[in-house]
Every structure is written in structure tokens, then in C-alpha cells.
Image 1 (cartoon, rainbow over the protein chains, first blue to last red):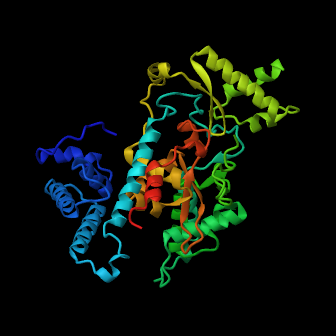
Image 2 (image 1 turned 30 degrees about the vertical axis):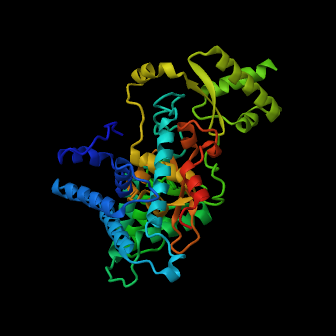
Length: 262
Length: 178
């Protein structure tokens, strides 16, 4: 968050600063609407489209990376503009929706969440505005007192290397017509964990001898750990690594969650 | 029962997460939840009357000792760190998750109009957002929700304490285009 005030546009140099404060195409559009003191329910599409595209041009001239989303909205604006130019057929006119309606809905929705974000930020935040007892910095006990220790990425890589070497000889590269996606594998592992609660690293890899599958499974596991969905533990170095589900996936209605025993 | 209040005060003092009445009742056998609640209320009042350096706050479904506002600059000095803050992208993403949960990544992107992968990852790492399940549609995409840590950080008792989204209500009432 930088608190730079939004001033008038006096020159190209201004853009650099302004760009940092836009969170995306909708944010830029909202800014233009506010700057021009336009009624959001009656946006002069032609004028706004012109200004919006002028901003995009300025971004380009500064060699800034223009996220694809900005261009998508530019296309949407142009499309709406062209629809506004079409004559309204009287027969069906009553039923026809304003071409701007969907965009306005999107803008109002985004604005509402932008305000909600501001409200959140205005609250008294822990570790910023007030403090409580801190969690111990190192909650993973590594000095052997604890019977079970959490496994980090490096240990997992080591285990992965072991699997690769153990099964190494049999690896055959094959051209697979059935392509496997990472998200698909993530889903499968989630289902497995949901059903069995816990799996060993070897069980997870199964009897898979296909290098591609082993790699995908490993990447999927890393992804799940990164998302804090799965956690890996072992009794001691080089012991069996067990994967656990870190969160309760059933009963999604219950936002309170059961994973933290307060 | 003076002892009960003393024990509860100690428990709250030691705990690094908000303690719920239920949790305290479990720790103290032979005490009713009503007794625990009454003792906690008394403590809340005592600390609030005292106007000292700590107060007992009700957050995230439990109670937690927190510091007084005016001490903040010195606590930051003591801890030797910068205050924790969230980027605008993170805050907007968090707001969508908080109000729309359980929510898909694609829903958040629909609202914000940008890719939210990085923001979402940051929130997961900060433990403000968690995976709450999978949607029962093809591909079974992952649904996200907020954590207890979110309530704790933002000082909310529960999710119902979030203010209502004003603009959306207005929009639904007016329905200017339908």
C-alpha cells in the first residue's frame, strides 16, 4: 500500500506512479469513472473507452508489462460501444438489456469488495496495531525430544531421489496418449487422503514405475504441502515418511473448521 | 469461586491462541461452562476497568490477552520488526474469500478481474486462508475459506461480525437493469 494521492493527469510521467496503485483493469476503470465524476449507472462508454485505451497506450509506451486482463476489458468496452451504436428494435426493445449492465454489475461488485478490503485494513490488526502472546518461533521440535517431527521439502526430495534410484532400472519413457495434469493428480491425492487420513510416501507413489507419474505425484504432494492441505511427518531421519491431511475436507458448511483445537 | 477465576487468568496468560470457553471447561473438570463464562466475563470487566497495558479480548471464538494501543510503537521496537501488513491485492483477495466462502479461485478472479494465484498463495502461507473442500462439479475444483487465524488477526469474534457488503445490497434492492 502506498499512500500516494491520485492527482490529475499532467503528463506521461505520472503514469508510472498511478500504475502501481491500480489493482487491475476494473480498478483502472473505477478510477476513470470517479475522476470524471460519472454516474456509474450511466457510463458514457465512448468517452471512457477512449480514456481507458489512452492509459493502456501510455503503459505500452513505458514498456510496462501489460497484463492480458487489461486488454480483455478494452475489448469488452469496444464491444459494448459497438452495441450501443446499434439501433434498438422497438418490438423486442422492452426486453433488451442495456449493453452496459453486466459491466456495471461487475464494477459495483468489485467496488464493494474494494471497500470491504479497506474496512478490513482499518481494523486493529494483530502484530500491527496490537499484540498478543507470540507463538514460539520454532514450533517444529528438531532436537529429538519429540517422537514425531515434521518433514521439510529437502527430506522429501531425498525420499524422492531414493524412490527414483530404487525403481530406476525399470524406467521406460513412453509417449503417453493419456496426458496427466498436475491438478488432476492433486485431486486424486486429496481423495486418497480424505479416504484414508494418512498414507506413507511409498504408498502414495504406489507401484508406479512410470517416471512421469512419479514426478507428477511428487510435484502434486509439494503443491498440497504448499497449500497447507497436506503435512508430512516422520519418526526419525530416514524413517518412513507419512503424509497426513492437514485440514478437514468434509463438512465445508462449517467455516469454523475443526483443525484448530482452541 | 475465586480459585476458578485465578486459574482461568493463568491459562489465558500462558496460551498463545485464543482460548474458548469450551476448551477451558475441558481443562478444568467439574466446572460448568456457565461458571467458566461468568469467570471470564469478570476478568474481561476487571481488565477493561483497569485500563492497563493489556486487556482481555474476545476473538476467534475465544479469549486472548492483547496489548493496549498506545504501547504499539514500543512493542514494535522490542520485537525489532516492522508491523505486519498486507498488500492491497492480498486484502482484496481476502475480502472476497471472507464474504464469499467457500469460494473458488476462479470466482475470486471473476470479482477482481485479475489473476489471484500469487495473492492466494501468500494468504495460504500466512494461514489466513485455507482449503475448505472441493466443489462437486467436473474437475472438482478447490474451495477456499478463511481460518481462525484470520479472525484472530482481524480481531473478529466470528464471521458474522464482518460488516455487510453495502454496495451489493443496494444493487440487489435497486435492480436498475432488470
